[in-house]
Length: 417
Image (cartoon, rainbow, N blue to C red):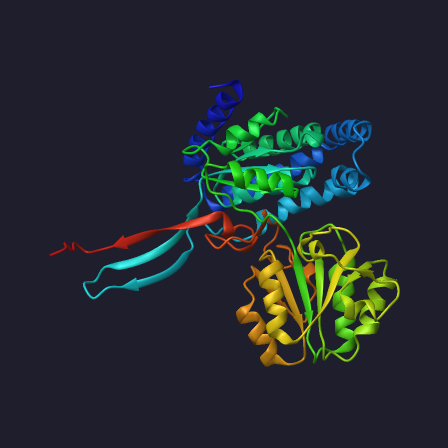
């Protein structure tokens, strides 16, 4: 066993003890701990901003892109947003102990399914130091212990944010070891977490494609994640022209670097106004890569290559294709999509319902921008990520997604014949 394996094993054992202690914590105690943590984040303003300035300086020296530096940066406004998000999680209803369903058998046994925490969660993430606070808050509120491993570019920021959170949790009388941060930036620590079966119950990666691919490939514990966000918007033949333009432009251009950004636009061949739709995207600053029919609509379009239909650009680029009806649109999505978020724009409710039923996606939308693929927009508070898998949780994962259930059977002395 190398030193990183030994470190993760010790953290895992400590986390399991903390998880056991959390089982006896009340809703009020967990909420109070998060409110105290938010207070400590505000009180630690100077230390957090100084640590972040050091990360920013090192990031510039390492040649991080402007986009990466923007994700890394914390200022007064962002720090207040981080603290406020922790407080908002404290106000959310506690899912632990909630009854999912109940039935009474003919023999008088009452059987219930009750929500319980997942256990010890390992979260591996990049760039954004706010994830340290968000993930810790969501895990604690749902009764889980968490082991956090942030990116090397944000190590100083993550350490100070974690320290403030831990102090707040301890002040409220809960185990500060319920939220632990891996202090080393060595990549071998990630490998140790992925193999910590029996100590870590589930791994949640948040970051780029290479990180998520490594986690899914190497993990020996369950993983909750999505690899790509190849999101589609299909403009049906009966789409309202103004809605189609507004939704398509917003879905692509509001924020191009989020996983819910539209990457492929499918336009029905019988939609009467494809030209203005393509022009609106180009005039919004988007490069349009289209098939032959799209290329005829505007000389500024670029010819799409086969790889474009399978690309998550995370940039102001969109692949556009003409399709013949909802069947062809769904066939394209099935072949090239990533089961993340897919949308239809149409005034025909029957076609919309067919699309909703047949699209095999974690999130399916009708007459709305795919940029709404976010836990906050779903009224879930802060999210831990988007899951595109079929087991356990799907779509935005927040408090409820960090729980499982157990059966509780209540009897009056019954024995089985």
